[in-house]
Image 1 (cartoon, rainbow, N blue to C red):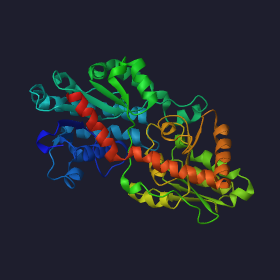
Image 2: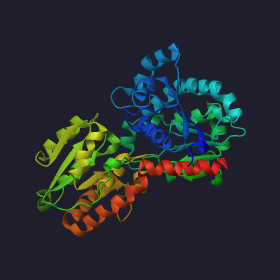
Image 3: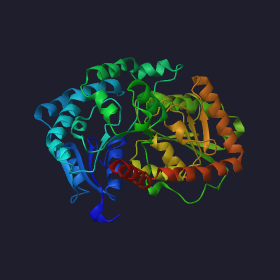
Image 4: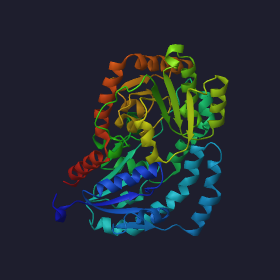
Length: 423
């Protein structure tokens, strides 16, 4: 594309930080890769300034300041939701005033430029949860507005109410209250020229609950992978030992406890051939370590604690099979990273990860009950330990599947959407 004819994009990414994890890191990856292809003006929160400036000193980035009142609120109120197990429903609810200030200031600063058609596209990327409005859409009278990918709202399976209670799902009613009370919420989704949904569940929810029309919404998985994770060759067995891997926060809904129980009931001949590494930390770690000791699995299970995201690559490369029985995942980037490294994946079919894994790249377990997931995990692990040709075929297919999720590929797809909208 000729530089002089590049599409001009105003990209609003409140959460955009290369040194953080989850949504802020995803927001940064979208900005980083898309800005290589089109002319991007990034609008983000000033809390990201130090980290972004260390990498993009010459880029066109606008940092929106925060009032002293909002700073104090953020420190003294929102952090209450983060003690122990994070209370996500409460955290999102309490965080709204912080976002609302940012949202209003973005509108005040850029409404005239958007009305004057200084940009070809306005693209709002974060927050990715589908519950916040974007006020700037009011100025997009002659400028296409793209929203997303948004993702979230996946319910807990019916048989897991104890875990749902631990994760404060009883406060999920706050979502519906927010939809009724937050001004501009419905308007944002109903007036957007295009909405990108990060999962099939969220897509159907937006269509049914917010009345987003079919021709204004598309499925676009939120997560991507760096090329450093992508291997060229499928896995090959170099020893009799099969290394199993779990990567994730050690919190109730990730269900590492079910994986440990599945290892415990493997046939003795299979147990002697496997070793499980659990990468991550969280509120459940002490209980998980106690369970490993009680089941006498100390020689079969290793806990690494928390490691940096880029350091997980070594664990993927040194493993043979990825086991991730999380019962409620919106994105699940770890599954994509594992697939890129050639690992067949065993996952629970509820949320985004059930859409990443296909019948040729691994196994999906229906969340019927805890015992059902445990028994299926045991069976699938045993199958892939014993059936080396199937394991190697799934390894090769996982790599091919992961190529669709490279950040460079996703950025080009977004730019294609820009071109369609700007016509």
